[in-house]
Length: 184
Image (cartoon, rainbow, N blue to C red; front, side, top):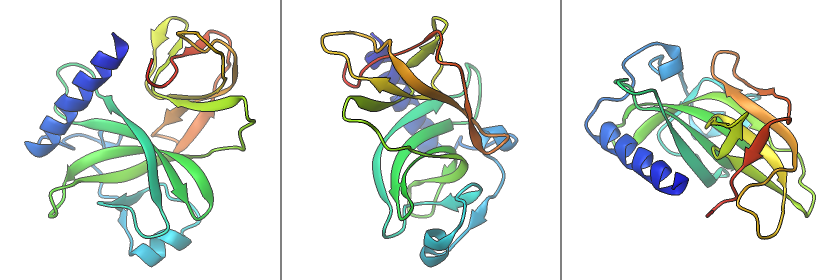
């Protein structure tokens, strides 16, 4: 059921991007311009927060991601969480989707970044499929212990919530956090 909901939200967000409805309000919805950098500048930046990009430069690889819709009735597209392999290692970025670029791609601004710590063989990084105290919170990223034949990971080692205002991922208590495995 949740996978169908995420697919529906993703489809709605893609449609909103192509209709030009992206980025109509303040910082949390992604309207600020951000810093546009050359691929060389992007690669050598100490922090990626506030950098605007249409596509990732060389030496950066998109691994996976999830779209996060704004609330019902909102005119802006919202955010996405992206797992990106960077010259400094794997990171999760909270990006605001601000507009469709001249190349026809959604333009993004990095709003928060999290360096992914090394994972043990029995751990997985989970994005946008975690519940906190029984409520889905798509801004939560967690490190979960892999459990076989379960519909939810209940053993969470670390959890963060993306915070666009501070430009960080805030550590949150793992008590009450459960996450759905990918493809569940």
